[in-house]
Length: 215
Ligand code: DX5
Ligand code: ZN
Image 1 (cartoon, helix red, strand yellow):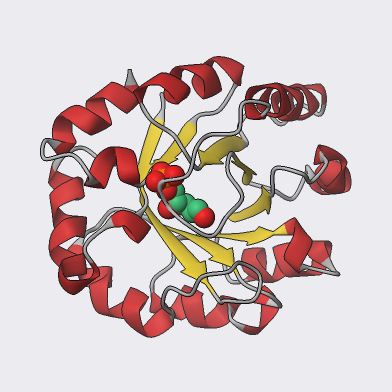
Image 2 (cartoon, rainbow, N blue to C red; image 1 turned 90 degrees about the horizontal axis):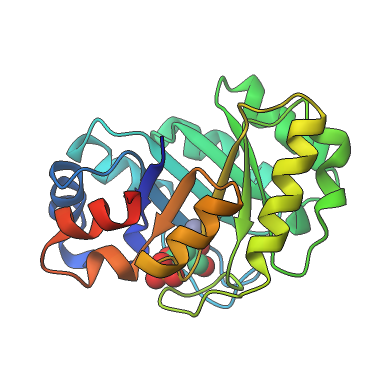
């Protein structure tokens, strides 16, 4: 069963709650919330106050993707603001194991995100602690970028590594450039959570867009 997580980075920020309600009734499974700090990535979005403000728009889980340096400083704030799961970037943490456990100690499932150039071996010793691996399929920072073709091979390697460890229930999430075509490639490679911004929010018929991604 594929999980579809619309990225609200591509929503209309002036009517964010309405756009969240709209993708909820269009069949979304999770709401993907992109947090950018202008340091780890060359863009800035919003913080816990905004997450808290839109939290009541839906009962769907908030899948919070922290593209920020020193995420350990803000994890508790995002948990309080209504995050249901938190994903941090391997590249942003000197002590990745410690930060993963900070998320778990708050009672939330923890994910680790890998930039396109980051080798999958960085999570090899963390596989027993993770609920989700986020394989970035673009360089993070902006919506509407093109899917990087090598990603499917990387997803296959992650799925194989998880299978060998008996961690078949760990989600593999993909994020960036996912549309009707690339969705097929990543699902076939082993991804089960598809983030999509542009492919959902640029469409008038979001129910159809989500159904196409689900396939
Ligand atoms: C990229 C973000 C993504 C982005 C995806 O830095 O993490 O979640 O919004 O947008 P699309 O689907 O338009 O590539
Ligand atoms: Zn994201």
